[in-house]
Image (cartoon, rainbow, N blue to C red; front, side):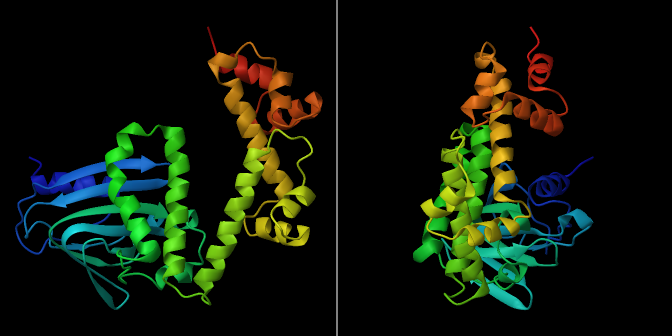
Amino acid sequence: MPTRFDYWSDIADQVIGPVELRPSDDPDFRDLWRLGRLGAVGVHEGVVTRGGALRYREHHVRRADRDGMFMVTGLVRGTMGVEQDDRQAVLRPGDLAVVDLSRPSRVVLGPCRTTSVVFPREQVPLHADALTARTASRIRGDRGMGALASSFLRGLPQQLDAIDDVSGARLGTTVADLLTATVTGCSGPGSRAAADGHRHALLAQIRTFIELHLGDPDLAPARIAAENHISIRYLHKLFESEETSVADWIRRRRLERCRGDLLDPRLRGRPVAAIAARWGFRDPAYFNRVFRATYGAPPGRFRDARLLP
């Protein structure tokens, strides 16, 4: 018959992934959890109701697909310690800490409430060394970016039920950006993390500009570079780090917007050509060709197959 510990372990697998839990004593597992997802980012809030409840938690990776997974955990109240990479951090309420879930670590919990996010490393575009250098280090939650990130994460679990999937995916990206800025701000202005953070912030700014002007058929690298005060060469270099080109990024985002409109029942009567033009495709024949190459069917047939009466 499953025990409370078995149930707790199953919840931990959902939140963190396939890990082994090793409590230091015989705790009474009556803890409370709130779980959710924001796109690729997992969110969880935990309330440990008794000092012995999961005092020690060791992460032993059992599957290769946990490589590159990180957790940022914040202490809302109570006591908590984190150990990894020969470092130890004792957190105070409001503080944050980074844990690499692909390698052994230990989290020491007393009665406490915590809020954490779990994300793939590629979701936070910092060099791997920048994240590894911050594991099990106290990120103060009473000043600077640490205070902003702590306040944001603390209120996030209570809003999960009110966030739809599309908004959640966007918010997940925002969470990742916030964590990037937080780690960058704790690493010093001349560090590799600071350089990566600046590059990521600029890339996010450029993507936002592109998103706002997708419907303009004249949107081109020269205009994007000029509006963001960089050279065309540097613009292309930024996108090379993302393993794509500016033109490919624009085309992909336009196709995704067109696909969304084609699947919207409210727009069923709108001609395919009008939808294509709305998102910057001047040539209907070209739009049909690239849409079919991307989604496996011409746009009209794609719509009909998915919007059956």
